[in-house]
Length: 319
Image 1 (cartoon, one colour):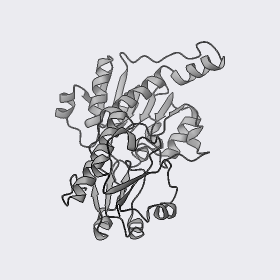
Image 2 (cartoon, one colour; image 1 turned 60 degrees about the horizontal axis):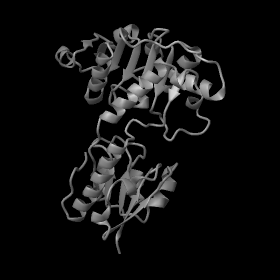
Image 3 (tube, helix red, strand yellow; image 1 turned 180 degrees about the vertical axis):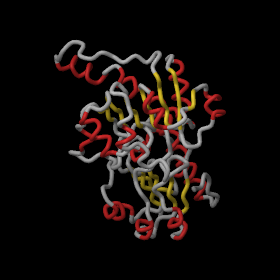
Image 4 (cartoon, one colour; image 1 turned 45 degrees about the vertical axis):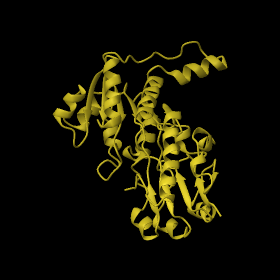
């Protein structure tokens, strides 16, 4: 009997079509799930008969309790080489090998700029008005050239966002707990002396920080209050870096010009969630990593990982 492999959260139903699964076809039956399992009970029941699971980014937690309910599971493949919602100790204790894949920073960089430009030029509102017969020209765009772009984080993604900002003629500054003058100079940007300085001085603030103990809730109500009334906030990193209640309160109060977010505390975002209707918010359903090239990498390397595991020589093991 072949092993069974479950591919989770294949919303677009492309996992088995974008790459060639033939190298493992004789040994593995692949089943794609085009919807999200809402709780651990449903997930455990659905995965009970699977030996291999391919999970997408950090959407599905794999705590110790779930591993204990999946005695047949032997290989877990996660897209990307960092995953904070997998209990690696529990995986090891239950004899589950965990492997990752490469992940390009290019798609989230491009989405960051799509969101920033969408905010600056009122793209959604103007397009909606045009299609629905609404007013002709209802917004006045914010200029990028000469404005200040503040980046929280200057790593793989933040540094690329900075380069595009410089190409637009923006004055780019950055801050993080570990950022040095040398690193800022290498990228060609100014290092803000504090996050407070960056927030108060920037016309656009974009978040590019990994989530951890030091960054969780980094932007709360006091920090959001520092933003200019004309400023925009963009978060394509992790939702929890920005206090979600504080963000909603600031949007409803109109404390700054607007925000764009691609990440949420709960994904997929439940029907009726206040983020769906918040004023001044441009929201997308976590599209940062969703591109053809990235998906080909994720699923292509998932096939490679499965093949190597079956041969007894796992590759790209995590953590």
